[in-house]
Structures are given as structure tokens and as C-alpha cells.
Image (cartoon, rainbow, N blue to C red):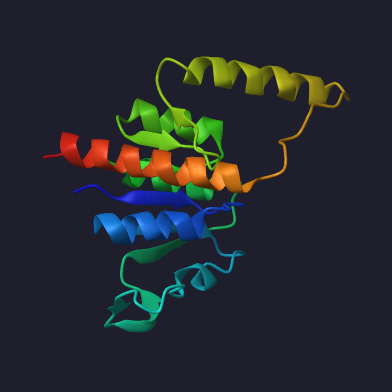
Length: 169
């Protein structure tokens, strides 16, 4: 069965991801550390959203996995839980690389679909920028998050989930 995992660390598209999970009727797992208020993400934003009978204040299509405070605890939890039928939402290129290596699918919060052909270049750029920062230099940060990013993400996530569901049959 296809599931969506969200790396909740600074993820601006949790609502869009939950909406996709609800539409596709697949589970969504929000993974974060104990310092994050993940319960807030599970409150239904749509009054028509089905309620989980065990937790009436939560959306039926989502659950929380809280992990320790370690730097990569959420990444390791996601990496150990995923199957090739799953989709992972993450800004972390390193996690995206691990996800692809496990045969699953990964998408960035701006709608970039990571694939085995492009992940090596992204990892190389990340490595080079890290070297510049360690040497005391500065690198350019991301542009402001826009409504176009949100729309692109929603469209590409829906496409990726449909592909994952087809391949897991």
C-alpha cells in the first residue's frame, strides 16, 4: 500500500500533502522530533474531512511519528520505515537520496521530483556549498516560497502518488 511520509522539519506544504492523501485515500505519516508541535498539523482544516473515530480532533488520513531530538532522527525514522511503494516529502536532499536508494519516490516542497538521474548533481552542489560555508564563505539561500511553488507541489505530488499506487499493484 502506498503511503506518504512528510519530513516535518520546516515543511510549508503539510496541508497540501494531507489534502492529497485524503483525496487518494492513502495514509500520511508526519515525522518530526519532539520539539515540534506536530499535533497542530493534524487538525482538520476542512470541516468535511472525515474524522478519526479514535481521535475526533484529527484528520482520518494522517498520523504522527515523533522521534528523538537528534539531528537526523526524523530522516533515519523515515528511511527505515519506507517501502518502494511510498512517497516522501522533504527539503533534505540527503534524505531524498536515501529514499531513492530504497526504491521509493521523493519530492521537494517546491514540487521538484527527485530522481536517480538528477540526485547526484543535487548532492554535489550541496557538498560544494557546504565546503564554501565551512571556509567562511556565504552561499545563496532559497527564494521566498510562493503560491506558484505551492501549486506546482500539489500537482507534482498528485502525479507522483498516482505513479506509486500504480506500481504497487
